[in-house]
Length: 333
Ligand SMILES: NC(=O)c1ccc[n+]([C@@H]2O[C@H](COP(=O)([O-])OP(=O)(O)OC[C@H]3O[C@@H](n4cnc5c(N)ncnc54)[C@H](O)[C@@H]3O)[C@@H](O)[C@H]2O)c1
Image (cartoon, rainbow, N blue to C red; front, top):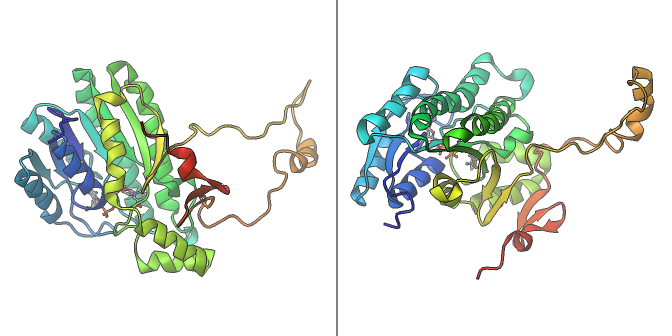
C-alpha cells in the first residue's frame, strides 16, 4: 500500500456508493483506518440498508486494510455524534472527516414542499455541521485534523434545485468559517465542487430537464462531460487535502472533474463599484446611475446552470472561450 495516510483515521459519510466509496477505498489503500458511514438510502433519501457500507468495509478488509461500518444518518445529531464515536472507540482518534453523504429532491421553487426543502438541507448542510462539530471536538484536543466538505457547482445557481443549491452554498460558508475557527488547532477545512457520473447525476429525468432548458445539443454535451467523469477522479484531490502535505491549504474551494482540477477565487470579489463622493446615494440617484454602471449589460435571460461557461468537448475544457486544459496543466518534470 502506498502509505500517504498511514496511521491516520478517516471518517467518510455516504461512503457506500459513488464518490464516497471511491474516497474510502483509496484512503484505505493509502493506509488510513476508515469509518465507512452510509445510511444506504435511495437517491431521494427514502429507505435505508446496511448493504452499501457493509460491502465497502468487506472490500477494504479483503485488500488488507482496516475499516468499520456505521449505518447512521448524518441528519440526526445523536447519530452524527455516534459516527465520530465509532472512530474513537474503534481506532482511538479522528484525523480526517470527509462530509460527503448526499441526496436530491429537485423541484422548481414554487412547487417545492417543506419536506423536500427540509430533508435536503438536513442531509447536506445540517449533516455536514453535525459531523464537523463532533469531529472538531476531537481534532482540537489532538491538535491535528483535516476536514473536506462536499459542495457543488449547483450552489452557484441551478434550475430546479433551490434546496440543494442553498445547502451546498451554505457548506461553502461553513467551510470558510470552520477553517478560521480551527486554524490554531492545526485543523484545515476545505470544500470541493465535484462532478462525476453517479446515480445523482446520470438520470434520464435530469437529461430531460436540461434538454428543455438548454436545448438538445448542450444537454447532450453536458451528459457526455458527466459520463466521462468518474467518482475515482475526485478522490486524489481529497486524499491530498486529507494528507499532512496540505497543511497550508485551508478555507479553499476546488472544482474537480475528470482531468480537471481548479481552485476558485474565494471568497467572490466585488466586480464593479460606484462610490459617491461627499454623500450617500439616494434612490433617485441610483435609478439614474446603476443602469449605466453596476447593472449595465444585464437583462439577458439567466442560464439554467450558472457555470455555463465551463464546457467540455473532444478538445478539452473551456471557460469563457479559453481552453483550460492547456492553461491548467503544469509542465510535468
Ligand atoms: N455526482 C456528482 O456529480 C456530484 C456533483 C456535485 C456534488 N456532489 C455531491 O457529492 C456527494 C456524493 O454524491 P454521489 O454523486 O456519490 O451520490 P451517491 O448517491 O452515489 O452517494 C451518496 C451516498 O450518501 C448516502 N447517504 C444519503 N443520505 C445519507 C444520510 N442521511 N446519512 C448517511 N448517508 C447518507 C447514500 O446512501 C449514498 O450511498 C453528495 O454530497 C453530492 O451532493 C456530487
